[in-house]
Amino acid sequence: MREPGKAYRVEINRIIDQVQRGVPPEEIIFTHGDYTYVNGLSWIDQGAEAQAVERFFAGIGVADSYEFTVKPVYLEQQLTGYLRFSYRLPGADHSVFLILNVFLLAALGAVTALLFYIRKQILEPFHTLQELPYELSRGQLNTGMKEHRSRFFGRFVWGLDLLRQTLDTQKQTNLRLEKDRQTLVASLSHELKTPVAAIRLYASALDGSLYDSEEKRQVAVRLIGQKAEQIEQLIGEIITASVSSLQDIEIVPGEFYISDLNRKVIQGHKERLELLKIELETGPYQDKLLQGDQDKLLEVINNLIENAIKYGDGRRISMTFREEDYRQLIVIENSGEPLLPGELPYIFTSFWRGSNAEGKPGNGLGLFICKQLLQKMGGDIFAKPLEHGMRFVLVLRY
Image (cartoon, rainbow, N blue to C red; front, side, top):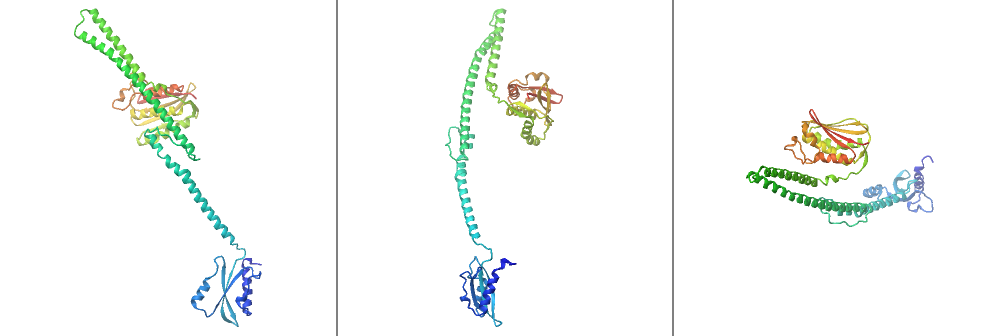
């Protein structure tokens, strides 16, 4: 009672007592409920072969689900042999092992089914989709995609096909606009031939002294001036036609915080500026909610930082914030050689480049685009030369 886990020993002692009183081991019955724990008994004589004794003590023949113990048997104080008892420990329920095995088999089956499901529903559909981004990057927009019933990739496939259709539509629109622009530019360029030919004719006549009176020469001079004005007008129309798509930029109105804008600017330029050994300074700000298109504003700031890298002296770029007349100002400055005062009125004109742009790539459209974008957002941009650098002030609503 004090050690219920060792109750089998009581039965073993009872069996040994029977054997020592002369009951043969083979006559001891383990049925009819006489013994609860001991269910098997083996006997080996004291004089058995060593190999048989070794197998006997090793438990050969005892079921794996049973424990066993070996006890010596004495008759008149003489060792006659050994009894081997097989028994179950009190409280041991071997059905637990069966349940555990069943559970492990079920888990193995579930994992196998899961892997098969992943292969059919995720891996195989993914293999069919992995070539699409590459094809899109090459401009192959004509091949549609079959709808997929996968719960994971159905919406993804639909989104990719919608992207393909949007890119194809945009491509066709761009081709049409480019064709119209080229047609218009070609038409205007062709019209230049007439005034140029007239100017050449009048100039040749003046050079050859073909006019016999001063009045006729003055008429020729006036006609040359008129043709030159006509050429200027046609050139202006050509430039307008060339940048007409820039004037149709779409702005998506929205709201965003200064902190979010500042974080994206730093993330976009910090690593590159560190490699170029250019210091990027950002000033303190009161986090306000600004109005406008955040992506377009980032495009403006990126353009200004690129210009600062290109035309500055490579030492410092700063971005500071302040308020003025109920407007949020973002001030971007860079160190370096400033523009000449006489060039400042043309800095936001399309295709215009300053005297500091010699030998540097560009088309003179960057600042023009910046002003267009900010004005469409209800803001503006101004430039001011400093003693040793340039300052650009962005005006935004909040």
